[in-house]
Length: 348
Image 1 (tube, rainbow, N blue to C red):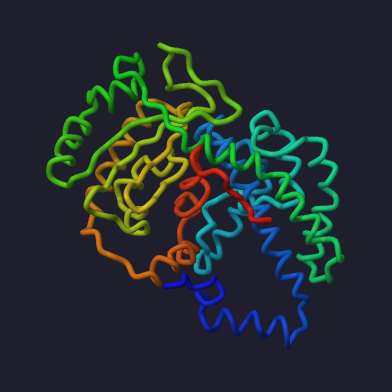
Image 2 (image 1 turned 135 degrees about the vertical axis):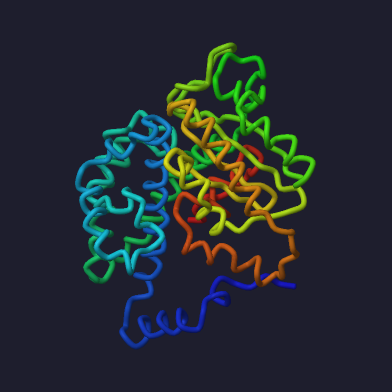
């Protein structure tokens, strides 16, 4: 059976709104295309900044994005009744005019995942002009779409590096003198002793601890600890061999609210597993505890796996609009690795 197109998956009200804007209000078709391409560009830049700042600064990352974003976020707390899934993300409140200077200020962290610095910075004024035209409802220039798509094409190599390195796992030496390895590989943590074997036998859930290295960082030398290192991420993966979990209920679980949500970078779901990534630079005792809290949350939110119809599978990405941005599914952070070549990240 042929897969349903994106347009076919839209709700009736969404289709009606687009039709009215295009034909009743005479919105240029190029504006809709431009907004879609700008969404790809800006969301990639913001998510990249988040990952690299978190991997370098740990829980203190928010102190390195500027006061204006956190101030706007605090003002928005008075409107909690209309909060979106992004309202807890301070980077989503960063004005676009400050996004590119923040990238430049953190260039050593983001350079491998972008493009030539001089070229990108030289394009900034043109890119912001396009953004301002969109924001102020001005009709686009005939070259605007080409300019945006060329920038996306130029970012392809860097984006692949950002995503593939995130999913390039290394497994620590079980004898490594590292507190997280001691806790979860040698099973010295109280929760590891309680759950690892129990989860395997009773729930058919297999636990694995690995780590990844960001493109700007250097892999640890043999015998060097992973904990305390900038640019390294712990990845706690729970392989659900016969069961599944609902992202929204797992995210709201009280175990995650204790400590883990403050430390985690992402919660990753790919159907057959759920994983949590934590910056290795953060306190190793808190990280070890957070892995245990995530373990409890996963086991408490398991349910029998069921077969999904083609329609349900095709609609899954569209349902993620209500999920916290730290929950990643069907994105580059979950599906792109060294084996997914050739691939186009942006399709531009």
